[in-house]
Amino acid sequence: MYDRANPGNGPLVGLRVIDLTRARAGPTCTRQLADMGAEVICVVDPHRRYLGGSDNNNLQRNKRSVRLDLTDDRVREAFYRLADGADVVVENFRPAVKERLGIGYDVLSARNPKLVYASISGFGQEGPYASRPGVDQIAQGLSGLMSVTGPAGSGPWRVGIAVSDTAAGTFMTQGVLAALLARERTGRGQWVHTSLLEAAINFMDFQAVRWLTDGEVPPQEGNHHPTVVPMGMFATADGHVNVAPMARWETFAEALGAPELVTDPRFTDRDTRTAYRKELAGIIGSRLATATTAEWVERLNAAGCPCGPVLSVDEAFDDPQVEHLNVFSLVPDPDGGELAALRLPLTFTDTPAAVGTGPVHPGHHTREILAELGYSADEIEALVVPAD
Image (tube, rainbow, N blue to C red; front, side):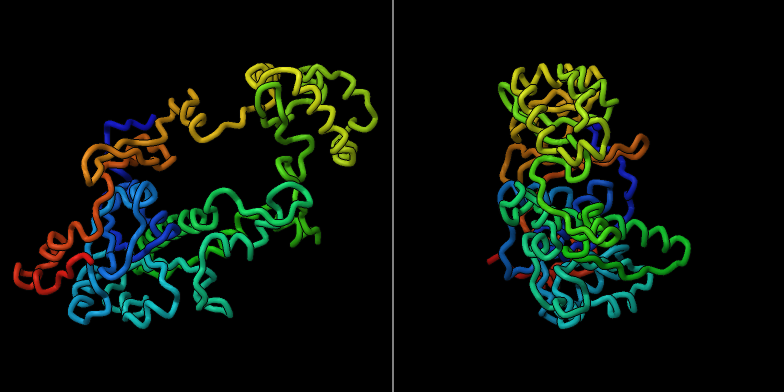
């Protein structure tokens, strides 16, 4: 199990990552790499405001931070030195910006051929939308995701989390690790890139292939599974449960206290249950409303039918299984005290991932990192840009 008190020695110890990202998708990737032991150095723009509060604390823990103005030729040389000794550079500028700054893949890889250069954009590095700014909700709408979310007939709904951001960041983590593995074989780095739009479409998964393979435009189904009937959410006497009748139909009907479902010709097999899904949902809903959530969770799980409560966020963190899994760590607050930070949801038996350090103020390690690059004290003072 994950041990909050033991930071461990993660699988990526010895890897240096330069983080040029902002907002959410890029910092999600670099946070995952940092949690697995990589040294992540954030390069922050001295003229740009950054996220604050709990959001920033969650995204920027486990990292060091250097303040560099990449529009200044002298300072850019310091960045080149930093990238020359790096294994990975991660950026999420719009495609033309990195070229204008002189920090694109061609420039950095010519200096450091083993470099893995990772790019996350809104819509891709090329194409008619490549130059557009992109954020999570725009990608959710463009990908079709919002069209399958929410109650039937209610119009598009945004997914409740920044799913295209976190998906793109997580896919990029996979891409970086795969490129590093390929480097072991070839001796060369490469450019790997993804976008919020690609990630959101990929996360559509079987909904997307229903169109690609079957020619079917998936409709909204609300809190019920789009293809597996009668999987969904139902009200109980004191709350709500999610029910997934994966056991034998007869077993589920018996546990529900509705044996008539077995002999009803409308519900005898998967096809008929799908055809009469509204009627079936009504019968199941009526039965589930007669007992409490806790009673149904116990009864249905005992029968081999997956069932769980629908919790608010505070209730989720009070759940005994969530508590057992140690899903967060306490880390130092740069202003004193401690902060809670979500841990990486992976368990390594030999090289555990960890949230070892808390967030820092932007540029906190500027002088320290410039000194590591060989700059003298006077040179450092000439390069340092004070915080606005």
